[in-house]
Image 1 (spheres, rainbow, N blue to C red):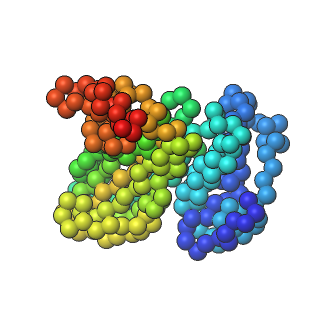
Image 2: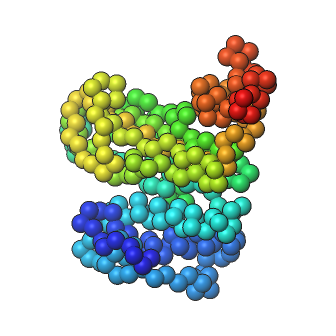
Length: 303
């Protein structure tokens, strides 16, 4: 980890334990996922993480967002190894915790409350399969927060919760789709986003395209305001926060994708007709919902 930046005043620092965990995870997953996790395995892992950097911070460095750094480090390590073992490495994943938290005084009980969750996103395409849609990647080990449970226990309305079509990184095996989740409030709330991926999407591998970046928006359907990935905003009644996680990167060139898989994705609403034609070079008859074989051949041959 030589060359890592000095630790920051902002809460994006990784502890040595987090950094070690990322390296051990990568090693274990690539060697043999069934290897027991014990002292014998850990002796294989040796890390040079300079003290006082973002990968080995010291007090009083804030670390609540260190998971953003740790999960991204996992992706970076995998990409670094991709030339050596291309058949074992996925394209870029969501690689962030995508943390949201909000709180205030509940209008139901007149008591203070606080809520926290992480959101899933797209996994990278792989050598023989698409990346899964809307999953927690690598060492996150967190679960979906169901709408029903959230709305029963907290004074919030989840106005939208859906896959984001066309957010995949195109490829022979596409990346998984990201998620969109809209939070609507009827009272004053302090809302914090501690996430990433709003500038660069997960990378594609071996000719695959990058996944769509993440988006964080205040009132997306009414005078929308773009938010950063690390921000706290004060909301008033009627405000909506939209969190849209990124899609996974694609694996291999998009023009090599099986047209039948593209057709399936269009049928399922994951890929639009326009994207199928312009990116995957597959022509689909919008009335018959079938592949136009002749036109597809022209598109893919460049004629």
